Length: 420
Image 1 (cartoon, rainbow, N blue to C red):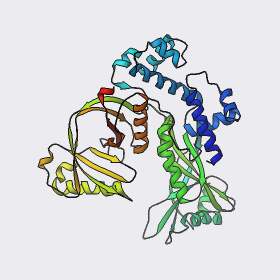
Image 2 (image 1 turned 90 degrees about the vertical axis):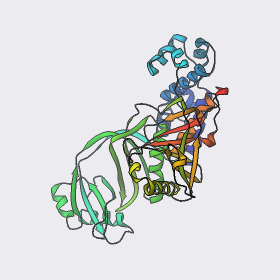
Image 3 (image 1 turned 180 degrees about the vertical axis):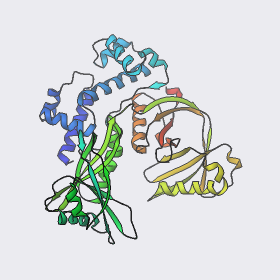
Image 4 (image 1 turned 120 degrees about the vertical axis):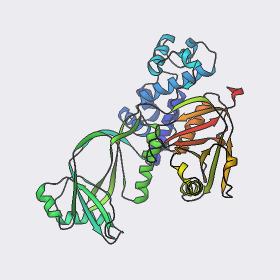
């Protein structure tokens, strides 16, 4: 995203937030941003992952329910303050969204929270329903890694100079000390035959239609990696979408045989539920952990703890399904919960930590997401709901009930109950 668009979209979010309780319409927003309504709708949706109307509706409800929790104002006053036509209208919306009345919500340990958009607008992302055609996989092997993808595409056009259909591709598995690049092409039988001299023919993938989040980037490794990181964590976390069932694709945009850009596709579907936030009492817990800094800090810390338990308690290790984590800007702490720390052998490189009992604010996510984004969500929620927490002591728990490839992450922050 260029700097001009970045400044414009940030200003747009500021304007929306400052006027949430008012009757904001597209015409007013377009004038405030000096853009057409079409550009307004497109840019807001592509960046935030919600339509303007949906963003306003959910932010307004989130703020109103924060007042329900923390104040003794009458419901009619809260409804009026946040722009609802009546107390009855507000109550119906709460009942429909949470399956409880506002007063039942006030007494519960549940919190509804739809956060202000906190993402960094790095890439333009759009969501569209598209069809990926039936594709044939072709494996290109070479003893040289440098320029592998370009040589694979050059081999494609050497064999089929007039090829004009879509080109998808990604790195494949090595074979016999040779590097592999996989191209996925839409070809006829005679075209496939022409490619057999330069490629090994692989599997076919049936055509599929689905909802995809997409962005187009330069064909440079650092840019591609940054784009996937942004979509997968920042954008997806804040948007109204979660992972879909169709996986991901990378499509090459080619000019004169040169793949100069990539279009990234991530399968998505509407979120079933946003991260859940609640208050709960936790008993005292003990953790044995390792702290690491620098490159691959997470892996270093995890390896230190897992090696320790593998050395002393290898049989028990396979039954452990939750892990303590805490991240800062330059370090990573990874640990395993224990029953009695006194029973465990000393190890100089490891940390013995006690998590005190108390009331904790808990954010529960369906996927790991990005720790720092979840932390920002939790701290901003605490601020909006007048809950006092120490954001330096926030920690997370990875749950691996569904395997290490599909962990869930919850974040915990101790709450000073005197201020609640």
